Image 1 (tube, rainbow, N blue to C red):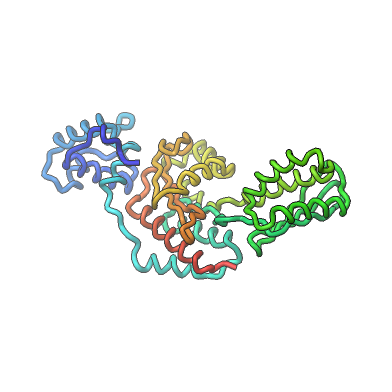
Image 2 (cartoon, rainbow, N blue to C red; image 1 turned 30 degrees about the horizontal axis):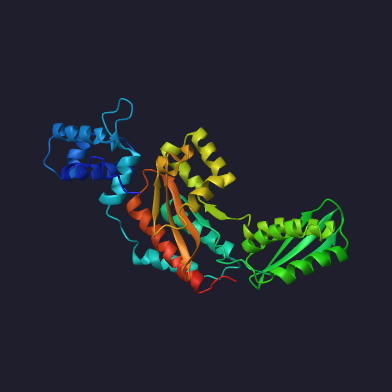
Length: 354
């Protein structure tokens, strides 16, 4: 995600002034003028000289002058240079790390409860929105399936996966099936697929249904097709990530416009957009930062998303992150996201939920 080598790079003085400008803008949220830069930079430069440097940075696409303001603000390209080469990241203090460790040492009823706590903690630390995907098992293996007939063309599907995880699904069918028909279908699945991961089971079921269509009675064929759908839901749970603190975003002027907030919250509620962004971070080597338009979604043009995958036993099982304005305090947010991911890995490795 680094700036392209073919793009012009400011000299040391230009980089220093860019860093000072971005730090000031992150802090205050107002366009930064040459007089302010002259005072903050510590350089013995006249406002006229600084204006010339700003003109160069603007030509490089690193800053822009909004409206009729005499000051400049960073562009996404300016922020990108800042986070890649100019920022001095501040590692969390011992007290912050201890606070994260203490919260993760609690006993949680489920992985979902754990990540809910982590997303709230990220939000509290950064005063932005925290997001954590629910850990997915590296392998979701079918141990056993059972069908029970219910009234009104419904079937209760009981799935036992990974030895101990029991999931119940109520599925609607085209007609009522007898207990005998359901027993025959569950015996077929358990005999052929027990111990196989669900993704493979679902692929093989489709193949087997095609190959045995002539020899298998229609009832059994239909029941197994229904089971295929049930396994899809088990493989991809509805609760795929937990978001906390999204109302914090209302405190940032650039995001507080009613229309912007409505579209942002709509994106959060539909989940697809955020899930796509998190999925693109799943194989990242450490922290990944999406700045404004880099996300590929127009609704996030004024936002940055800082993510980090978390692993257990070398298997990446989820992603966590922070969503905020592009003028977030990267020097603090990026290390918080990184450290939290590492400490969450440690907590999951010790099996503290259950």
